[in-house]
Image 1 (cartoon, rainbow, N blue to C red):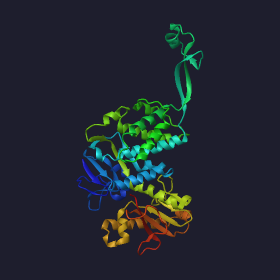
Image 2: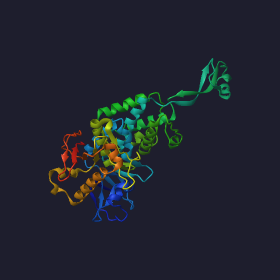
Image 3: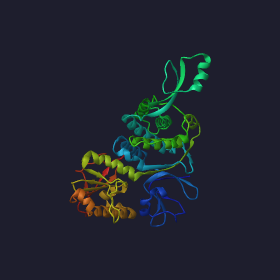
Image 4: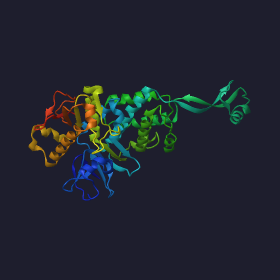
Length: 413
């Protein structure tokens, strides 16, 4: 297995099937962020994950800085609006071949578990879903529902207990299949949040388990997920069940499987997965912009149907009525644009040129101008470890030789 970092060259001979950088941006998951540059060399873009290539070899692409990844992920999770779109940032492929890796390299499982914990917290706050389930029990001196005559005679009347009957009835309760699946997944999470090493995460797990204390602990199987029925009144459950299924795929389908995972071996098997770091950075930036622009901020989510017919242009952010267009770029070389343009590599210079052209096109699009009014500022936001964690619209850096074009760095660690 090969281990590399995001945006790093890879010694890879079979590049014929790989896309160019522009082609990759349309279908990043199909190639796990790998592309061929202008010289025909294989390179990883700003995506991390584990995948198997066409030759059967596994490649693990790790984030350059763990701290950046952790901080962005947790910040997005805490926001009630932006966290709804967190699932767009990653995917997991449990039905593809799994790979054995060092336990210390498994950074993804803990993040998926943490996402599930925060989603469950929101679900419990709204109130657990209830449904009708069949209950069968022995009753004394009363009847409820339908009398089960066969079991009544066999269990009571044959023993001369004529005041007892076995009844079957429906009960409106929260102890239903969907909640049992979620509670089972919470149990699985308990041993796999150590990556964060934070007391508040353990407290969150305890709070969630308390919310589900009246739900039965049962063995969950693959067949149980086929019996789940989603309700339009409980939309949160659909995503929670999806994550619960992924957690069961990752950590096995029984409560006792936790015991089998804790072994002396430093190797574990994990599924192939994919994390879109530019998308995660975009959601992180959205939180910072919402703090400043509030309801004036318009967000160009992938599935909101907003794009131009020609070029399929879709900006990241607009400030309605303020004449501001903002693009988030997960590219750390932008800091050299402010310091010394000569330090930019040839391919970096080409990327910046395309980004500026993209922003300029946004400012000439009727759909966008109808929302923003006359354009006053084009802003590029990039990650910078020496910058502030907050977005300050009064601290923009004007791009030399360009009118109304600005950059600003945001600290992500």
